[in-house]
Image (cartoon, rainbow, N blue to C red; front, side, top):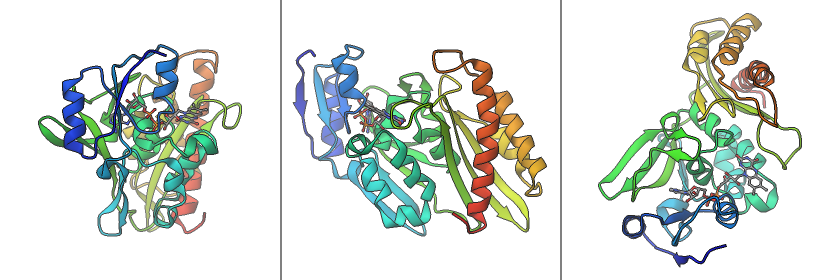
Length: 289
Ligand SMILES: Cc1cc2nc3c(=O)[nH]c(=O)nc-3n(C[C@H](O)[C@H](O)[C@H](O)COP(=O)(O)OP(=O)(O)OC[C@H]3O[C@@H](n4cnc5c(N)ncnc54)[C@H](O)[C@@H]3O)c2cc1C
C-alpha cells in the first residue's frame, strides 16, 4: 500500500476545504471498500479524510413528522440497533444487517455503500424504493439529489470535486405502507448480490395506491424501474397485478453475464425477487412482519 496522509476534520466545511485542496483525497467512512481498494492498487490517494469526527455525517435522527436523517458515515450496527429505525423502517434495518458480517457492520456505512457506487450495492435499491434523497455539500454550498440519480456509472457518482455526501433523508413511512429488499447470493456473508430488488408499496382500500421498485446488480448503476411501480398504482392487490410488475422489472433489467451468473439467469431472478419482495411488502403494509 502506498503512503498517504491522514486528516480527521471536525466539520463539513473543513472536510470540503481538504477535498477541494487535494483533488485525489478520498473520504473514509468505514473504509471497508476504500482500504481494500487502496491496498489492491485499484485506487490511489495522497490524503485520506476521516468522516468519523464530523457530527453531521454521524447523526441518526428520526422525527415522525420529517422522517429519518441518516448521516453518511453511520455504521450499519447503529442502524439495525436503533429502535426507531426498527419500528419505522424495518427493511432498512434488514439491509444494514445483511451488508457483510458482524465485523464489517461495525464500520461499514450506508453512505459509503452509495458512494462506492457498485451496481450491486445492497442499500441502493431499498433507498430508491423508499424515496430517499442525498444531501451533498461542496465548495458551492449544498444540494439534494434523489438516490436514483446519485450513481452515474460503476464506481462513479454525481459528486463533483470537493463534494461529499453528508446524509441520506428518508420520508416518514406512509400509513399502510410496507417495504422489503431481497437479494440472491450463493453464499451468505461472503459474496455480492447476483441480483437484488428493493420495493415499497402503499395500500388503500384493497388496492395499491402507489409502489416503487428498484434493482441491484443488473445494470451499470442501481436501477429504478418506475414502470413496474406505476403498473401497480390503482390495481387490486392480487397475484395478477404483482406478476405484471415482476415481468416489467424482469424486462427492464440490463444484466451482463459474468462469473456470478448469466444475463438470462439474472433477468429471471429479477422477476422472481420482485414478486417475492412485493408479496412481503404487502404483508408488512397489512400489519405483518
Ligand atoms: C468482507 C466484505 C463483505 C461485504 N459485503 C457486502 C454486502 O453484503 N453488500 C454490500 O453492498 N457491500 C458489501 N461490502 C462492501 C462494503 O462493505 C460496503 O459497500 C460498505 O457499505 C461501504 O461502506 P464504508 O463506510 O466502509 O465505505 P468506505 O470504504 O469508507 O468508502 C467507500 C467509497 O465511498 C467514498 N465515500 C465514503 N463516504 C463518503 C462520503 N460521505 N462522501 C463522499 N465519498 C464517500 C470513499 O472515499 C470510498 O471511495 C463488503 C465488503 C467486505 C470487505
